Image 1 (cartoon, rainbow, N blue to C red):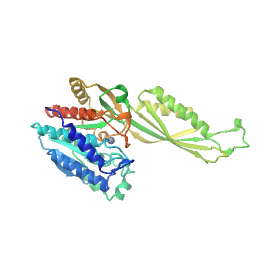
Image 2 (image 1 turned 90 degrees about the horizontal axis):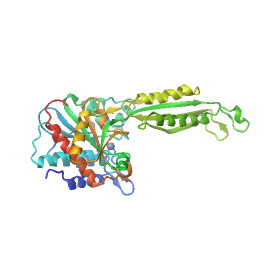
Image 3 (image 1 turned 90 degrees about the vertical axis):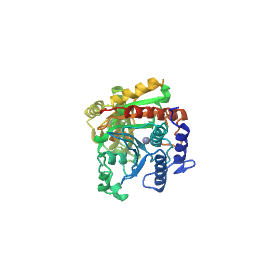
Image 4 (image 1 turned 180 degrees about the vertical axis):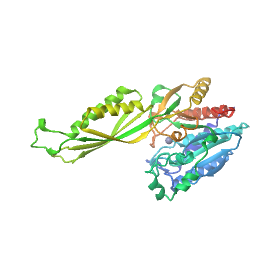
Length: 393
Ligand SMILES: [Zn+2]
């Protein structure tokens, strides 16, 4: 019996999910709150039960380590939630990591490499900024928008810098997560193997027209910025669709100026966001639309390169899935994860399990026990296989 202990994993997920839970609302564990600290203490206890040596760094990342020789195998995810979140997002990856280690030790397995399980703080970005904990851990850039929030929570850059680990000492980084989106369910797949995480571009767009009286200006003499913006937005959507089936395009905010019922809109501002596994097609979509509309100007304010998972780890995951008769799907992650901060420097792999109706960040988030166990089992087998590797990946 070399299988993970499923009921223990389920019990821990439920118990951790109760910390910060409000009936009808969901689970809220924002970092630097008593609920978060209580949740982290619970996870620390689980780590200790699994035989991991624990420590908490200055920004609040919880690290559990099983000593060994050579480069470290790291399993990570997060235990913070959005306000009114579910019990699986993030926590599943951390608790499954702990379960792997605990089961390996129960089986009498002697690990060669050091194995770390890390519960990163503030992945969701509601307090300091998205994936803050893993950024500090990996030495990622703490951008300007995060700095005032650091001060607000009594954190200094010295403390942030003190969290930085030497990434050359890591063999690999593994993250197991619930899928956010319903692709696996729709395809009837049991495991998703993510080739990476999409790149993101966001542009602040301004459409200029001419504000005028809504009653006395005939239709043929108008320069209506909103009418033009509607055409532009439709065109952006069409171009994104034509560019790649993987590309998504969203306009989620729009402001009309001066914004009065009896004034023809003189200016419209909106933000367009594109996500895709590669940057170039997104740049082309934006450039082509900007070129065709003289009344449109755009300013890029977010440009996040895609993260690629390790082809070798991808291969290993595929081989293990085939060996177990697991129906897997090769995909790309449209949502960000802590792995983004690892993928550039450390061979990394992102695994998904199905999430019912593709729902996350909600009290309705649900993954079936058999999916939870299958994912954790696969993770454990990956860790064993990687632990046998001598050289670099
Ligand atoms: Zn997450």
